[in-house]
Each structure stands twice: as structure tokens, then as C-alpha cells.
Image (tube, rainbow, N blue to C red; front, side, top):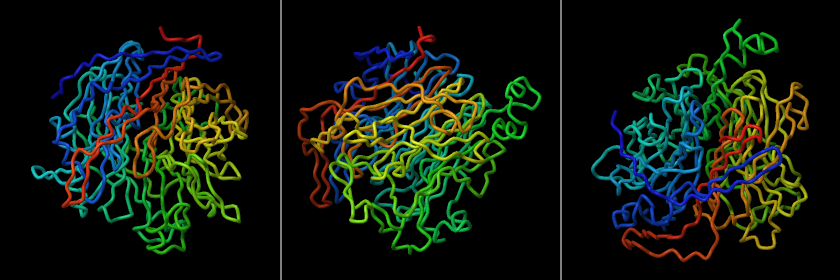
Length: 598
């Protein structure tokens, strides 16, 4: 197996230990790089990433959208990854990778050199995702790598890639190109991919599933969900196949306008149900009916996704020119099922969260909230727009009893439509779902009660953790300096599916503030979709009774003004360097006090 050598970079690790009632929280205050140790140096090799007719900004030192995985056979071995040096118009210069063998007391850094100016083949990387095999033998990494402008010496200009490490994150296999295409801004006629994830099968040690959405070209507004599988631990991967096409399904159910160009999927994530053989010890330990157990202890492979599509009466022009707050665009959350380890999939999706009423748009976050029309509907946003997980839900399964959970941003839980975190659950393998209820604990009378970017995980004992951000400590006195915090809300499963404080089988236990002090939302890297302080996702995972959270926090000013590094007047392209240390990835380990990890 080919391996890239690990680059062990010594860094100063700041670890804070806090005590919430009944919980112990250990936080590493930046598992990422210090500004002097960044893996990609600023040289004129990077001139190639400038976009014609655009202003490109490299936020040198800024991390975004992290992921984390814990070795199930050695929970002291934790691996983290993130986008390193985020750009304003798509992706990052490289992926950062860190690993620890002492439960976060010390971390080492390594990298897989994707960046073309550091020995790789691509200008940009994004959407990194990690998942450990159930036997701890390997950890998978999946990402999307791409060129903005075609590189002349290769036909492969973008790909979903997969790599694995068999030594706890120190070294990594040569990346497998799962979906190589020639798509770039100057070659828009070729297929283009987006928003990948990877899931190791908890029931089959050598199986893993990579999923993403693919557009036939950059002009299209339609995407299908694609899948590639490995059954030998990542040594080889299957040819990408269409897992789900939303268009015929939406048309058959009367939800859309039946124009193929007017539907897509995004945020695809595979969740695998636990498996218990009828008659086994695990089967008899579960006291529910045999029919219910056959559904949620089946080992079925579920692909969750968000569908974005046109209203039934919309024209193609209505849909592709629609702007927020939307009039002709609908969003729902669905799943499709495979009963043969991802080979064949249902053609009809099960709706998990239906599209909101027509007058409720998707939950964009503006630091000052919304303005409203005379009829009370949203007219626009106030303050600074943020890039958040507005249509990127999170999904998890209890590894013992198969209870499923979906958390998502929603505008349906407040009369003023300000974003909140919703949760819905299924106790029959995803066939039916509860009503959605509010999961965030943000005081509803706070001056700025918006909550956003949730991620969910479940422990084996039925504790459900929800990681999210909110503005509860912001007074709205300055809509351009918004106090933001990261929180973990913990719930406990109860026997009655309509019981608990939520009415959906969950009892609230505790909320823990993970950010020791508020940070400023506007201090993160800027993007064309808003400031990316917390991005489309943070990440939460669970092992035994512990939760492991990774999230980004911005640093405080003063910041220097980005400087012009390269300019091509003929192509009207400019490349700026924002050489400020804007934000870093933080890791928090949350343990019940009775099981604090030594």
C-alpha cells in the first residue's frame, strides 16, 4: 500500500477543562495549524487559482467545516480533519488532518497533499468527512477536490476522493479517484460533483459507502445522488452508480412541476441500522414486537438527503431565477433504503421532514434577523448574512436499538420564522417519523434567539447529543458584531415514544456551553454565500457514553486588510491574501462524571 509520509508538526496545545453538572468537558483550543506552520505557503504558484472576472481571496490560516472520528477499539485515538485556508469563492487550499493517541492531550498534524502547489494535482479541496471501521482497523477520509481553471497536464479536473489510514491517522493511502471528470469553470459542459460524505458499515468491517450529488454539467439545476462502495476496506471502490434520482419520484407524488432540470439532492449521508439475528441474545434483549424489531434491527442501509425542487406551478425560469425568500422553491428531507448493502435502492423516497408551508422559506441566517412585509412574511435579511447549514441536516442512529434521529434548521417553530433547530425521530427503522419539535435550548425571549448548524449523535445508552450554535448572548446592539456560542444539548431516550419533555420519546437532560466565551460571527472567512464562521456543518460523534465535538470559533481582531497578490487585467482577475488568523477548529470531549476518560 502506498503511503504519504506524515509531517509531525509540533504545536502549542491549549487544553481547558470545565465541569458542567454531571458532565466533564475537556476542550483542545485549536487542533489546527498555527499561522507560522501552515501546510501551503503563499507563492506565485497560487496565481493559477484566481478566477477570471472575479475577486479571489485566500483566507490564509482560516479553518472551516471540520469532521471528527473516534477509534471504536481505542477511544484515545481520535482523528480530525477540516478545510485549511478557506477561499471566498469555493473550497480551500488544502485539508488539515490531526490525530491523537492520548484522548486529545497532545495532537500531531499530517496531510494528504492534494494542493497542486505542494505536490498534489488539484487547486482546491472541500467537504472532508471521516469514518472509522467498526473493528478500528482503518479510518476513511472522503473529500471533494477540484480545479477552478483547467490544468493543462491532466484530464482529471475534479473528483470525489477516498483514502484510508491503518495507523490511526498518521499515514494515508494514495487517494482513490471515485468520480474523475473534466469539469472546471472554463469547461462547464462536463459533470460536476458536490457535498460528499462517507460511512463505514458498523455491521461489516470492510464495507464503506461514499455518497454525493452530481450535476450533468455546470449549467444544470438538476443533480442525482451517486454512490461508490468498497467491500475490501478501501483497496478498491465500485464504479459510481445513481443511488437516487429525485425528479421522477417528485413528479409521481405531485410535489413538483415534473421538469427534470428543477430538482436536486444535497447533503447525502448514509446511516446503517444495527443488525440482530432473530433468536439471538440481542434480539431477545429488545422487548418490542417482532415486527418492529425486524424493521429497525434489520441492518438496512439508509441514504438520507435533502431535496430542493420547484413548486408544481413553477416554470423552469421561475425556478432557476428564484431568490430568497423563495416563491417557487421547496425543500424537504427524505431517505431511500437498500436491503442488500447498497447495491440496489428504492426508487421512491420516504419523507422524513416535509416541505414547510408555501409562505415559509428556508431558514437563512442574518445576524440582525429579518424584515417583514405588511402581511408578516419575510421580506429580507438584516445585518450580515452567514453561511450555515440551512439545508444541510444531520442524522444518527442508536447503535443498539436502532432508533433514528434527524436534526435540521427550520423556520417553522417561531411566528417570526427565525431559524431554530428541529428534531424528529423514528422507532421503526425510518418507515415513519414523529412530529418535529424544537431541540435547541436557546431562550425564546433572547434579543437574538436564532440557532443554526446542528449535528446529532447517539450513545449506546440512548443519550442524544445535539451540537449547534446560537446568538443568545448577543444583544443586537451592533448587527455587525454578533456574539456567537457553541452548545451541546443532551436528551435521554424514554420508553414511551410520545413521552419525555419533548413529547417524542426524549427527556431533556442538560445543556453545556462549549465555547468558553462568545466569539464574533463576522470575524470568520467571507464567502459568496455569507461569512463562514461555522459553515455548513460542525461535527459530533459518540462512543460508549462520551460525545466528541469539533467546531470552529473565530478569533478576535485587529485584522489587517487583505492585500493584492496577483492581478491579470486582461482576464479581470484578482487574487488577494487575507493573512489573518481568523478561526480555528476546537475539539471538546464531553464525558459523564462517572466515566471520565483517564
